[in-house]
Length: 129
Picture (cartoon, rainbow, N blue to C red):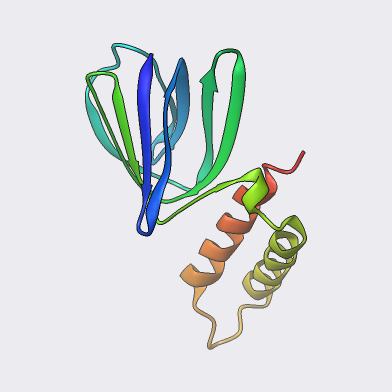
């Protein structure tokens, strides 16, 4: 079993044992199983998959860092959201606003901020069943 701990600035989001997990790393998704090589890497916005006892939990994760060592996974992230945490109607409206801003590109637009908003909205929407 792999021990996973997810820490956000205001609380510990999750502590549990799991069979394996798939993390959206900065260079692509990667799986962590027992005996994984130690690693410290950056997380990109994406879906975190946690598998335990034949069940799978999915979380929208927005940037952060992960360390893997001795079957312990520590994820530090500003925001980690389960399906229950997400207002999908609001996420879809945020997606639409960001797409319009990126298409129109007004002079005063902060491109990185709009691009980040679009990434966050799309990540949240991937959890919708």
